[in-house]
Image 1 (cartoon, rainbow, N blue to C red):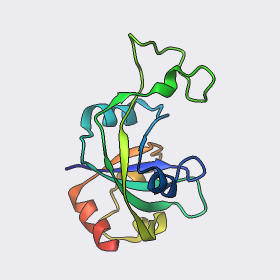
Image 2 (cartoon, rainbow, N blue to C red; image 1 turned 180 degrees about the horizontal axis):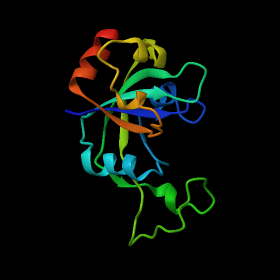
Image 3 (cartoon, helix red, strand yellow; image 1 turned 180 degrees about the vertical axis):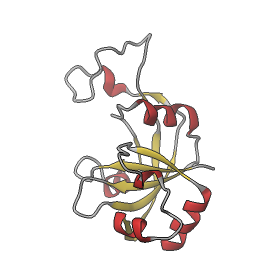
Image 4 (cartoon, rainbow, N blue to C red; image 1 turned 90 degrees about the horizontal axis):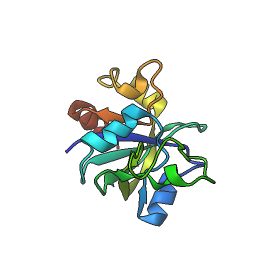
Length: 150
């Protein structure tokens, strides 16, 4: 089983929204590396650390799981939507997504400051200078440390 951090701005879609919905497509990703993680590496059952970004206290707020294999991100075809991709066609799909299912909300989030201050997490991709990816892998060692923090 792999572990992933998946970032979302809580004003766009939060762990509370996922708890309410139970499951949702992780649509709107428009970065090739993040898309490739979903398309090539994510498997049903993989663990997801739901991370709130661009908010007063960024951090991990919940746990989810990958609930589907990668499939076409339908928002790329919605000409009225903000995720529209005019280069995509049904024959040449550029963007894919996975579905994510809710598991739990952390009683206390693991903040970005907590992650930065925790020995053993210094090399996490989310902490690397210039990292703007909305999806990053988490190593087994990093997961073990984070799990103890929950």
